[in-house]
Image (cartoon, rainbow, N blue to C red; front, side, top):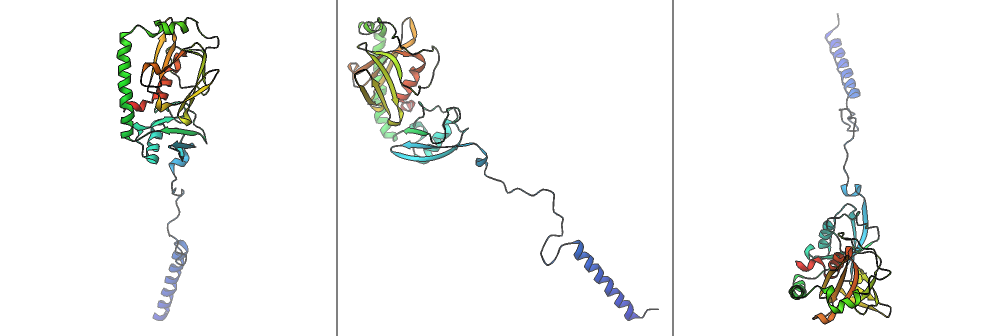
Length: 279
């Protein structure tokens, strides 16, 4: 029979074996690793959602200042205006944003084909400046409408008939009745002026100018100096319009252009006067 000392010694050895097994099966106390087994999947640290979208880099130009902008291609024109507000302080309602014509707020940058390195022009002023400019324009427009209602249609008036009776210019551009299109990237040509000479319109958006070109010369007119734009469909050819740009305070300052394709009429008015004038 074993003595008491021998029993105690056997018990200590058994305890030592249990301790060694625990160390082998569980965590290593020296390297601080967890006793729990690793799970099959690692937890993701996440990422910038913006980086997963297709981005486009371009420049915003306003008041001789240039801003580098990077936005998702699926951002809308309205989103771009908010970005411009952040950069310049101009409220969206006071912005006249131009890229191949006046920027549509409901279209995406992808839809209007903004590409890397493109330049987007912004014209805008303070609220006080806008009110000082737009109030006279609105008054003039109302006076013009009232005066037009008292008169016979423009295309029947003698001063216009002498040009319209010549018929369509041979190189007149194709017209699309009932369709609204943005301004083309090339000049609108194949039209007559009030003297019956050929005329073309070029919209220099980066300079905020309208160039009226004839065979003899080209007049470069700041869009902000144009008081009003009026137009009227030509009788029996209502897919074309006659249009006038008011360059001074009276009707005598109207620069008339004939055989303007109907699909560009609204785009011309919006670009020259800007929708922002109504705010």
